[in-house]
Amino acid sequence: MSETSHSTPIRVVVAKPGLDGHDRGAKVVARALRDAGFEVIYTGLHQSPEQIIATAIQEDVQAIGLSILSGAHMTIFTRIMKLLHENKAESIVVFGGGIIPEADKIALKEIGVGEIFTPGTPTVEIISWLKNAVVA
Image (tube, rainbow, N blue to C red; front, side, top):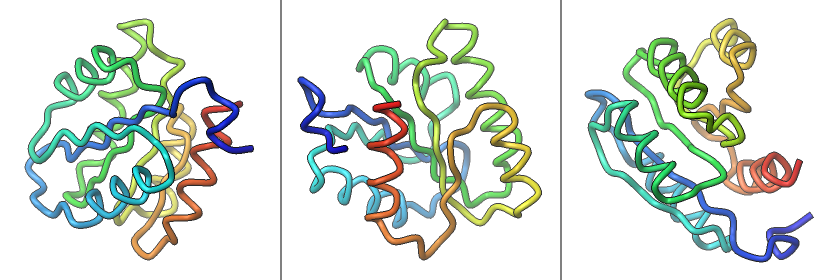
């Protein structure tokens, strides 16, 4: 199913939380999503979970993509999911990318993170997953 089934394009926040300054992957994903017809709000570096959630709610997005290479993925994703719940915004799909161990991927999915993509994942895979996740 494509985003054309939506009356408007799928809106996504792509963010780099924490002190991690490596943003190439986030920019590649943001560009690929834009090229595929998504509306992308790229927040830039050093965003707090609170800033990311505030942006997501203000921009009325359907998804949040986090790029985390700092090793703080468990803390940051847990905080994001808690803030979504506190703001009654659990319908926003959360996905991420980074160097995240398999055991942590499983734990993240258990708290509601939709998917984790590791470095080297083809962008078409991310696009396809996101279209299906938002439609579902």
